[in-house]
Image 1 (cartoon, each protein chain N blue to C red):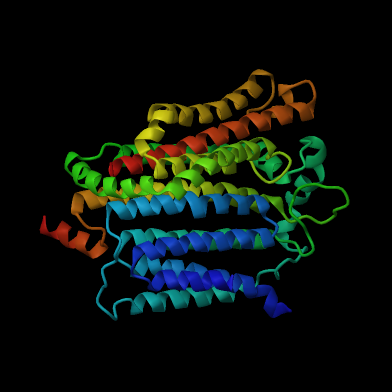
Image 2 (spheres, rainbow over the protein chains, first blue to last red):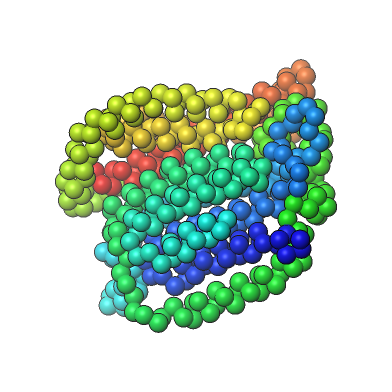
Length: 117
Length: 320
């Protein structure tokens, strides 16, 4: 039981580390943003996992229900998702702008171009 | 969750960025399902609308403007990265042994303000959906901040790529022109989208005004409304959709939403309460709360929808 209780957290860590790996090991900027998104999603799942109460239901008040899951993390993550897509759009806009200036979206090629100048 | 992990591995391995974007769409749909299982219906709603809709469209727009194939780097290089990642992961797993087990009602997170929200919000705010109460009333400041972040992000996108260069404009116009011609020729796409779009917009309005009672609210409604427009723009034409809603109007609405939110806060001040205290807006406390929450949710919905449409227009104009 103790083992199963932590399984969710472990998968979250695997997800988080996959995102982290994509960010640091890949040169492509779009891929890096996808990696950041996966990292972000793992944090979202982490919060929602913590909010869950065994035997609880969704936090919408109704007759005859005693146990609700914790609404506070839900609020935080709900707004974070929308903010996340707005900031992703900002990142993608930067990628397009970089492509304009350097003609590539590969990190090392940009660096090479930079050294030439 | 295991499926999510598998998808993320596929994302890491795959070189074709088009495939990667499709996989992230699937990834967020699966996380939406997971949120439902974990009782977070509001969050699931948002994730499904954002992840499968707008994020994917924006990613694809970027790919159309840049490249859809990742260059294969020399082998053996990411070993250090892998080692670092595994080491960090192991440390984090060691950290989880101090975490409370999954679903434990005695976990510290459930013992501070959360019980108060659950017990009192019914009387103080008078709304069944506790998530909405907390979002709009108890934590109104936070949400105002989030709305400003979205506003700023949309402004940033406008500033960075608001004015496309001439040369690229012309070359891309031809390419996209061909594609769009193909889309417009497709009768099934046109008919189905014509049928669907009114329902999407009506559903967005339902989500907007019903958010106090069921899952929903300004954030979700804004996203759904925007995706209705974006669907129209994708299948017909960005120019046609811009005739329906000019980009000047979306920019105006973008600011209007933030102003409505802040204005409700100031109205509370003028009526002798604190900033963003809705109880003073009407004779009765709960009536004031209802009014305040309804108005600020509308402000949130306006800003989110306008921000998403503005961002989409800006991306679309790049290729046009």
